[in-house]
Length: 406
Image 1 (cartoon, rainbow, N blue to C red):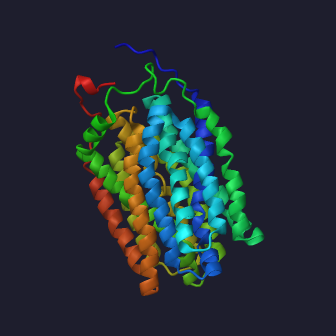
Image 2 (cartoon, rainbow, N blue to C red; image 1 turned 30 degrees about the vertical axis):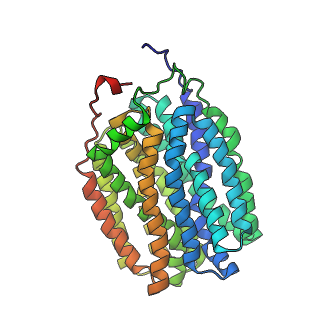
Image 3 (tube, rainbow, N blue to C red; image 1 turned 45 degrees about the vertical axis):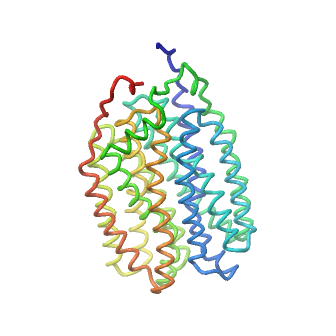
């Protein structure tokens, strides 16, 4: 059956609004490590209590990201983004005023995890993938990921200033108000034809698409690599403020370090997205993971100092989210874009399982050994393994029977 041509959203409008949404939602998210010590000290909790809540957040984000991706593929990103932005604000307010570890896990963990699933990469990348030509897709994904990094760079010092000036509770309330700016930005994501007979939806059903993807070895390898990505970035992002303080450095060093990660990741993700238009994506991913393992090893050998922390942050920033546009572009190239948000959600679920383990295990190991050494060594080992598993990925478009062709 012939279908009417799909009307694409204007690329400039889409890119600006998607970048702004990711900049805000990821900028807020990357600063949660700044609240670890204020909240645990105010309530008399262990670091593990805080770590569990953020670990739950990442796991819930991964699980619900699958379903938010399905909804966005079927009904469009607009409704999903707006609903989850409201939940995001509610979760931040809940973080500020809950006083037990269980309630903190429900607000900072469950609510914000659900919110992030619908306001960050999987859903945003899905709408971009459907509306951007293949020859510009990886570049656009890189630009959007760079915006998330700029949010980290711009908002990290602001969040630190809010905590020091207004206190950690009011700082969270102000962030909740800021997140509501996502709602008007989401108006640009309304796709008038998606989910209708004239859309670009594939003739594949959801279950056919899932059987195809999970039966394909390269998809499995991409998931394995993304698990490691989640472990590394969330262990570092959440625990480096405490690691810095444990080594006798000023806590402000960690704030600047996290900001530097965001600053250098602007260039790293943009470069990765641009290179993915011209070079084999699996080789780019392997190089990123090997380089992370090397950087962590050098950081542990170097004597702790503000300069060593800043150099490590800048180096890791170049590699921080550079896997995101390359991995998503690989999935789109292999399977097409009709189910991109859903398949991206499954890939990201693997990332978030790694995030859960990285956050929780970092806190657990610290509380039992008194340091983060074992967690750092594990991050190095996983980086090497991720580099190896990405080498055999086949990123050529999958060959389908006629029934499954869009």
